[in-house]
Image (cartoon, rainbow, N blue to C red; front, side):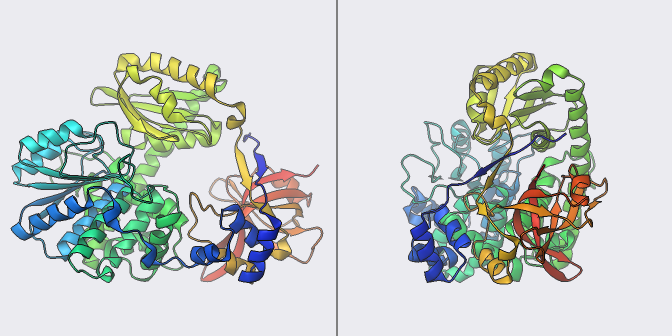
Length: 586
């Protein structure tokens, strides 16, 4: 049985401010209330929110070390130095590498290469193997993206080999900053950049923006890179506020109107070329395919194998010829299909193990270890386990003689502190409040498991172990008019910090046409109406919620909370409720 969710209705906006906004903007009071709830309580702020402008992007030279970075790249371009663009193997890293690489290629730099470390043999971040490769190839400047902020020793090692580094990162730095030519990171304590929630690709874009400005390259020449940037912003789950909202807004326009050949290939494979692409489409369809390449272990002995790992993802993203992009797209999609098959299998194994160990089911956290599981999918499996058991989760496997894994949290619980409390048992770790990666020696697994579980037991609020749905406000089905939906779409792009609103409707019912759909009848599709407004019916879908099917099919009343979305089917577009939770009215 699924865990019953708590509904928490957010505080409603100041009635006077709501009324003023509704009147001045000509929108529904319900939507005006959404603005006020999000801190947008003046007409001027609302108009800015609804009409993002590229002119409002911050001056990139406000970021510490930007001048030094631009000067060093300028010198490398003038002198024809060999430049390597280096980045992590996930979506943020590969899009960042593709963005900077494409820009340098566009301005005519010839001595150019890129490098993505292998997840299995090198791990995350700047590696000795990568530095040695650069030195061997005669590279004198490495631009590192989405990594490097803690690579103090690696930067010294590179300098001794005649390789300069420019670091573009967005992760929290340690006390010591690497002694690179330039370290661009808005989270540096000594950096006064006005917005510190950029993705790694976003920091790379600010570098490109600065170089373009210093060299009289019009902004229109770099605007075409925003399709890559919005894929990064969506996939890395950074807040869709401030500068990210502007970049994502125009990135989506680019992705829909004139995507690059590589992204166009993925769009077609996903079947997204028939309708307007949203942030959700990136998160659930485009991003996972790019990520899959870096997750999969490739056959190193197969000389005829396609480009492996994150390297293949960058090859796709920088490809300028349609036919080649189509072939790379097929490779990436194959990786994704293989990844899904493996993560389904491993998730089932993890479920079976937990269900067969009653003491694990009673704990407030999950730590599970299997040395045979693939390193690249343990983060996905941790997220899947939270969907079922809803508690902080660590999934561990074996890689290169060490136990390595990923941890995921539930809203409100600081996972990073829990992992940090076991730091003496770890070789290394990193992450943030809701996600972390860690490595330890095999002999420390049992003690880590005990101490992590004890920390969670002692520090988690019991309410955090109950899934919560935040409801923005109540809504009548009769209020969901075409005009309402059109105005609601002006709030997009949705994401962290500007979430798609959740509405609640009480006393809804079904005529008896409810049905279970999906390969395993796991989804509930139905038309809902309100008893107060029986002539208003609306199409609804409840994913992974078959529990109340019989109750609903018999016409019994339910309370529902939901998001309002567009459903695209066989060329037609209809308004649909995406049900978040259902409560039978007894």
